Image (cartoon, rainbow, N blue to C red; front, side, top):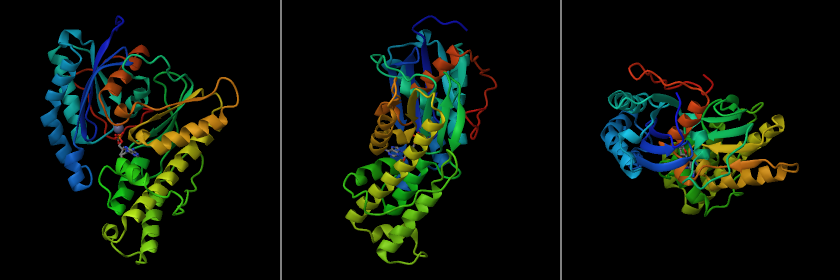
Length: 363
Ligand code: KG4
Ligand code: ZN
């Protein structure tokens, strides 16, 4: 497929609890970016309920697509292709986005592309309002940190991904969410832990780093370590129900636990990233991707680590997506699709596109 410059892609994303659509030009310039979050609904439950998420996507999907086109001052004639997240994610949620994209592709006779969610998070690092001229250079290492994944990827070039490290159990975002629950902080845990941590003492509680070989991670032990340390601090037995601990914690204790946990979780990530840079000395840049990339402590520790390494020329640069693009959104889907097309990826059949709730980025 040959496109002229000014290629406009409509990106659609519904893998979890955000209904999102955006128009992106040439993979890097945002023309619109509409995200309807279900966070308010799930804050009341303390987590995502898949059936409720799918139903909310159904209600929001078409108005979100219409708004994305309207904000971009586009009609269907201006759109060159449709891109949609088909993997991984919640089954019902993925279905709403893909069925919508399939129908729109058939109706408006547009090529349809299926994009892996983690690729999209990585490509959020290429997007801006069109002013940016500094892009990550290859080969690079990508630290992917979201609610469902924690991986280090080696990318020799565009659209080439090799998983060199992955978590054996919980994802780091999931760990933030679980620790927030123990501390009585609202869902999603990442932002609420960050906020509490800003008034806490990060050195107050010593939490262990897991001993995991190579570039792999483990976060379930850290969550349990927080639980045990809270119980010890409060002088209650380990059989004490975890959901009742929050009633015994003072505001200062919550802040101190949040800060100590955040510092440890981030240090674990940065330690492995540093090890990865030592093992892949040809890496020219680091990109951080996924919801946890919004974390200010992570940003600080990654930049410090990278600048402490950069003795040679050219220096390794670290990139983070704009805060508005760290969580799930349609713009990153459009961007990833553009670079897939440039790499020779062909459109999929809109009559048969399937979803893959658990498929790896390598497949
Ligand atoms: O990428 P994302 O929006 O959805 C998935 O693909 O999973 O990531 C959501 C995760 C949640 O676990 C949330 O708690 C975490 O990202 N998160 C953060 C922050 N903002 C969101 N974690 C740490 N610090 C933050 N500021
Ligand atoms: Zn995501």
